[in-house]
Every structure is written in C-alpha cells, then in structure tokens.
Amino acid sequence: MRPYDADVSLDLDLRPAPQPLPDAERAAVLADPGFGRYFTDHMATARWTTDDGWHDAAVHPLEPFTLHPAAAVLHYGQEIFEGLKAYRHADGSVWLFRPDKNARRFARSARRLALPMLDEDDFVAAVEAVVRADVAWVPSAADGQETSLYLRPFMIATEAFLGVRPAHEATFGVVASPAGPYFSGGVQGVNLWVTDRYVRASRGGTGDAKTGGNYAASLAAQAEARDRGCDQVLYLDGEEHAWLEEAGTMNVFLVTADGELLTPALGSILEGVTRDSLLELAPDLGLTPVERRIGLAELRERLADGSVTEVFAAGTAAVITPVVGIRGEDRGQGAVYEQQVGDGTPGAASLALRAALLDLQYGRTPDARGWLRRVV
Ligand code: COI
Image 1 (cartoon, rainbow, N blue to C red):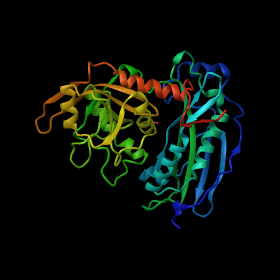
Image 2: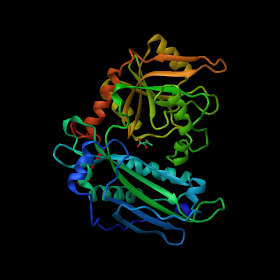
Image 3: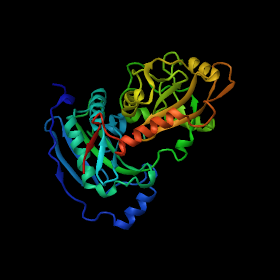
Image 4: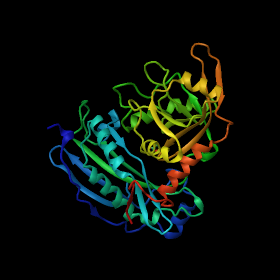
C-alpha cells in the first residue's frame, strides 16, 4: 500500500475556545468582513503519519502552527486546499453548498500531490464541526448582502526531510473566515488580461488539482494583468497558447446570442463546484450548457460580430463576476488589442445565473437537487 492510500477515520475532539472574540468585536467584523482578512475562534486539525494513520483530530482554538524549518511543504510545496462557504438562511439556519464535491476534489488533489487520503465523510464532518463551533461567525445575509462564512480546508506535508519523496507526516486543517464579495467592484464587471507570456498548467501537470503552487505561479501573471490595467488574468493552454483555460482563481464562461452557455472542457483546469452547478442550472434559465475547447480566436471573432454577448468568471469565492472587457497582446506583433464584451456592462444572463445560484445558496428558492446540507 502506498502511504497516501491509507484508510482513515477522524475522531474529532471538541475543545472550545476559552476566550472567543467578544460579541461586539465580532459584530464589527461581520458588518464589513471583506475577504480573507479575519478568522474565527476555532479551527480543526488532524495529524497523519505513515505508521499511525490519522490521529489527534480536534476542533480547538485557532492557533499558529509550529513547523520544522525542513518541513516538506516549505521546500517542495506538497500542499492542497479547498474553498467552500456556509450560508445563513432567513430563518437563522446554516447550510453548506455541495460539500461532497469539495471533499471529492480534495481527495483527487491529495492523490495528485501524493498526500494521504482523507475519507470524504471525514472531510465534511471536520468542516461541519468548525461551522458548528463558530456558528456565531456566520453572517446573516440580511439586506441582500452576499456574506457567508468561507471555509478553507487544507493539507500540508510536515515531515522534516530534504529528500524528494512523498512525506511520511502530514497535517489536515480547516480554518474559517467571514466573507463579503471577493472583488470590491465585482458585480460592476472586471477586465481580463489574456496573458501570452505565462501559462497556468500543461497536460499532465497539476492544473486540475487545487494546490498552492498553481496559485503561487499565478502571482506574476496577476501582476502583469494589473500593469496592463486589468483585474485578472485569462490563461491560454500551455501547448498552443490558443485555447481558453481559466482565470486563475475562477472558471470562465461565455454566453452566445443563440443561447449557449459555453465553458472550456476539463483537462488542465480546475473542476469548479460553481462551474458544475452553473452548467446544471443553465437549462432552467433557457441556456444550453456546452463544454468544449474554445479558441481565443473564436472568442475575439465572436465578440467582434456580437455572437458572444456575455463573458463571466465563476468560483466559490467570486461567485459570478461579469467580464466587461478583454485585453491582450497580439503574438509577435507587440500591439495591444482591446475588446469590449457586449455593451461593456454586466449581461442579463450572467446576472440571472448569479441570482439563481445565490437564491439557491441562501435558501430563497427550493433546493430541488438536494445540493444544500444543513449544519445548524
Ligand atoms: C475559491 O473560489 O474558493 C478559491 O479557492 C479561489 C481563491 C480565493 C484562491
């Protein structure tokens, strides 16, 4: 048996925080949480070794880690993570959205990064235990605000060893952070820089795993986008630099004049939970979901002739972010092109899909597909 195929079952010990943040201070944070700036009172952790499997699983007060300076994660980036949200409904109940999808992707990422397997039910149980311990931190989405509790499960290789091989020790954790919109200007729409210089992933690489290295490698491209006056990067494929991939932290979608919802097929992109949900919801809104290769040339032609009417990016953190323009550099010519999407404002289908997804997540419409899981 390979070390990362170990069987597990977490027995979570609950150690409540003796001094949670006072109510008034927490309320001040929840009034304007931003994204990823504040953390709740608790976290979950579990340790794993090849000899003992998973052990020391607990929900306990949030605290810093102690890591040996030679821990494998610090040198070779053996790390994976997830992102999902807990939503408070109008009656005060708290729900997760399709946590089983995150659990499955976490397991796939673990396999790709040669980290130990965590049972999918244990993943969900740990997330739920943190939500329960910190339920007071789940904002109420009163006044239509898109606030939620963002959950960040992760796993790192902790063994102190400088040889390159799967580590024999790892730690799983879940931290939680109250969240408002990911982009402050979000629903107003963002511009994407089509980078020709950087690629995010190649076939056989780690593009379809949620691992820190993919995000570290995106930072220079993100800086390039900012230098070019754009909010985010749009990546092309690693082989031909011709096919749309994703926007680094989000999947990309096009809406066509004849009612297709187009998105790049899976392969070297992340299999987003939001991506999958939108493809399933599309027919409810009269859109035909299509997953296929989409060329940059096709996008540019169809933006020009008006047969692509909308573009948006989608992910757990960013929900649906309309894209109002793309900019890039023509290969070999050095000239910058710039194209507006539609009339340069968020499109009707993007906003309708966004509303449909949020209505479902916040319990404002019936959950016909059984995607919501009640925690409290
Ligand atoms: C998410 O959408 O949950 C992500 O993981 C994107 C990001 C904030 C890294």
